[in-house]
Length: 136
Image (cartoon, rainbow, N blue to C red; front, side):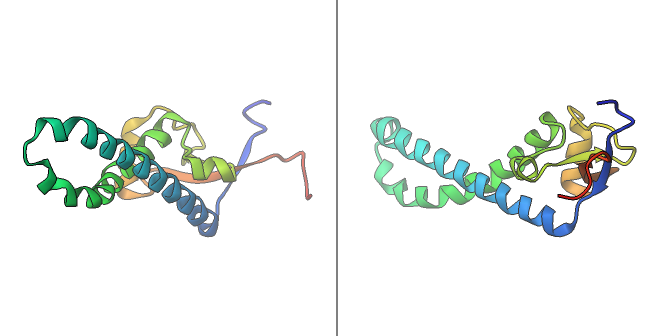
């Protein structure tokens, strides 16, 4: 398919919000996995090394919130930068982030970092439209 034939339409805010919900669910799942690994490591390694490890154990329950706060932005930034402007939620709905000139944003780390903090930053979220296909 030639590049001239590919056209894009901007995605509605509702579809973007649905993709964000999926990304949040993925982030929570990753945070739970990391929490499980941290608890397993705690039980095996740190209780043997630290003499007063039992006193710190109640704080491990709040660690999942910290994992989510730290790793969700990292997940979002890296997924967008490495997969042509797509996170798991955007992949599910067939969306991607492109520049305002409809160019790829793959491996443009500065652009995605700027976009993470300032939302637009010279980008838009689009869905590919095939002009040869009309209707269902």
